Length: 427
Length: 102
Ligand SMILES: Cc1cc2nc3c(=O)[nH]c(=O)nc-3n(C[C@H](O)[C@H](O)[C@H](O)COP(=O)(O)OP(=O)(O)OC[C@H]3O[C@@H](n4cnc5c(N)ncnc54)[C@H](O)[C@@H]3O)c2cc1C
Image 1 (tube, each protein chain N blue to C red):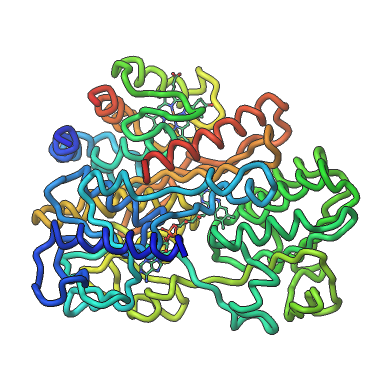
Image 2 (spheres, rainbow over the protein chains, first blue to last red):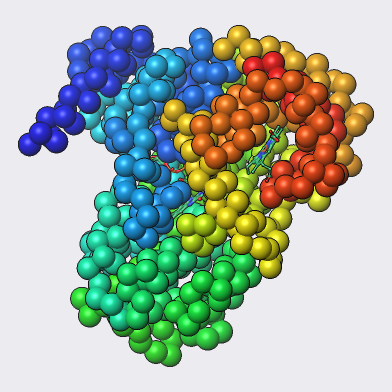
């Protein structure tokens, strides 16, 4: 009850804020109808950064951020919640700081982006028109690639690849699992959000089992021949969790073709595997709004001009973050935020009739193998011949065989990174 | 706010000068975007709120000396060598100036 009325209240706030600072069409008094120079769709890593940095570049630009939820739970560090190290509040942020900077935050869902009319349609009614739109809707799942599972079975076999209720569900299932049980996990095919994410999840579940359920096992069925930071993860697992993790790849029956949610089984080409807790992470594509508005191509992702992130399919609309094709950058929160800053600079310049400027990006993916054992992979990206390129000589992995002090330092820096990027985006 | 505008202006100047020094196969980035790449780890304007070192409130010389030492390996690091090797010396110089002026 209390929850519902609070939601209504928040919606009201969003709308009146929109009324306050936007030019109104004047019709419906409680619909967020109006216009802004820039409408940002989605308040995650990409969208929230874009809104904040547009205001930093030029506070006079009117910016409306449309995001359905008044709180945002990050996937980064959600594995620490699943592993029982942190609680949900550690990974939950809100939009107060953005509002203070003058961003109009409307808590609603965009149901259509119209590139010709230059406006977005809102679920609760009303349209907001824009000069330029920045879209960062994240991912959607390809349930069609696996038989026996769909959005409804995620209540039994969680993906926990969007943070929030799914994170809590997987955490609760692991907490309820008896000692001696099996955690069965299946990561997706490339490309997907956060390449080192499955390895970190395996690590932090192992860390939890080691302390609380030491007779338990982890079985991974991975359709890929190798995964991100594999050498570093496997080094850490051998040291910290010997004998606990069995990892199957493509060539040793790692390809899951079917699932039975009720029986808690995954079926591969050659065998069947039962899990007490199952975490199946489906293959992915760009968030639904990108699909339905015509921003995606056959690959299921959004092709963009990598200088400005302007869609190749819809002029005036920019797509950043996981949904965009920004290869060779990986799909990470760090990348999404870096792309947002570049895109905001370009949009700010374009609105003033200036050229967009040349981009430069950094990405670093930290992973925890345990509380005091961190590893990372980094890369600096430049721009040449119309494309994002890796800067030669930069980046790379943490060293293999490093001592405990080095791993411990990187674990501290991993938490430091999370604190900083959360502040840089929502703080 | 005002400083951000300064950066945009500074960006144009630097693009002009730094073309000469750019590494072989990448175009020179505008200064506006360069310093922003540091804030994901060091916090907005270099003010860290957690376990990362704060780089706000330091002089340009302090920052640029550290960056060049990370890049050459003279100063050991977990990640800064991997980061600084992706920037030209003139870019590191521009970034240090921007952060020192925050
Ligand atoms: C377990 C796990 C661990 C991870 N760890 C890391 C890590 O350590 N470091 C790292 O850099 N990355 C990490 N990631 C990846 C990171 O979470 C994503 O890359 C990042 O969230 C992408 O940002 P985005 O803006 O593209 O999408 P999101 O952050 O998902 O944001 C999308 C937003 O858009 C909103 N939205 C969607 N549709 C609409 C609509 N129609 N109208 C309005 N709003 C809409 C959603 O509500 C959401 O808030 C991890 C991911 C996982 C799953």
